[in-house]
Length: 430
Image 1 (cartoon, rainbow, N blue to C red):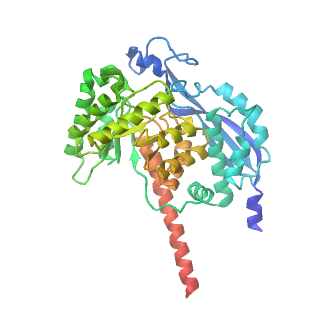
Image 2 (spheres, rainbow, N blue to C red; image 1 turned 90 degrees about the horizontal axis):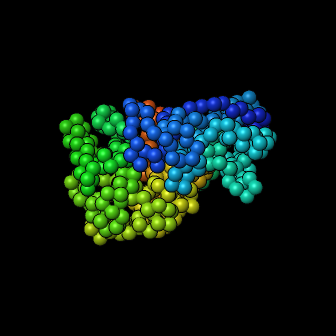
Image 3 (tube, rainbow, N blue to C red; image 1 turned 180 degrees about the vertical axis):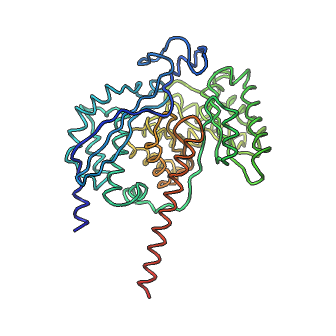
C-alpha cells in the first residue's frame, strides 16, 4: 500500500520566491577591457547586453513544488557570474524568468507525478516552440524534481541518481576545489588551513595579474607553493589549479606550441605539485577552442609534461562537453552546471567524461546558492566525478562548509544504509 502512495505523489501547486546568489554578476568583457575599480565597485559603463552596471547583485529565483502529501521541495534558478559571454545565456533577469516560468512551466508541473525523476524532467523541460527553456529554469526545476523524487522514495538525492542511471552506490569522497576570488592571499591561507584538495583558482583575469610574459602569475604560483610548504604539513599534497581567463593566449600568443611550452615551464617550476591550467586561451568560438585546445593537449604530451588543461569557456552545453571529450581537447572538463541547464545533462556529462577517460569537474559558479550547491554535491558523489567546486560564494569558508558538510553527511548516511543491509542479511542467514 505504501509503495502505491509513493507512485502517486504529484505536484499540486508551485511557489516562486525571490532569492539571491552568493556573489555578483560581472560583465566580463568590460572587466577584460581594463576598467578601473573603486573598492569592490567597478567604474565605467557595461559592454555586455543586459547589464546596467559592470558588477550587479546576482539575482536568483527559488521554485517550490507543493506535493500532494503536503511537503514543499525547492530548487534555485540562477545564471553564472560571467553571463552573456562565450556563448552563454543572457544575464539572468528575475522578472523575465518569473514570467516565463508562470506561462510555460507551471501548467506542465501541476498534476505531474514525481516518482520517476527522469520522466518528470522530460515532461517538465520539454522544448517550447522548438526551443529549450532558459537554462536557468531547467537548472532550478530539475533540482526541485530531484528533491521531490528523493522525498517520494524516502532516499537521498544521490541514491535516486544511482538508481536512475544504474550506478553503484558511492563509497569514496570527491576531491574539493576552492576558488580564491580577488582576495587571493588571505584565501590561499584559509585553503591550506582547511587542507583543501585542489587550490586556489587565483582569478588571473587581467594583464596586471598575469604580468609581462606571465611573470606576475608565476610569482603568485610560487608564493602559493611556499605557503603550502610553510604551513601545510608533511602529509598535505594538493593539486594546484589556476584559471587564467585566456591570458596565456592574450600575452604570449595563440600558437598552441608556445602555450604548451609556457604551461610546461610553469609545471616544472611548481613540481612536485600537480598543475591544472583552466582556460589558457580564448580562441573565440567553440570550434576554434576545440581545435586550439586539441593542439595544446598534443603539444604537452610531446613535451612529456604532466600539466593538465581544463576546458571552461565555449564549453557550455552537454553537446559542447561531448565534443571536447571526443576531440581530446582537454584533460579535464569543467561542467559549469547553470550553463549546462537541466541537472540530468550534468549527470550525463560526467558519465561521458568518465567513459572517455577525461577528468570530470562538477563546477558551476560563485553566484549559485546553498540549495544548488547541495544538489551538485549529490551529483558529484553519485557519479564519482574527479573533482567538485566548493561553491557558492568567493569567501572559501562558506563553499567548503556547504559542499564539504553535505558530502560528509551523504557518505555517512550511505554507509549506515549499507551496514544496515548487510547486518539484516546476516541475521536472516542465521
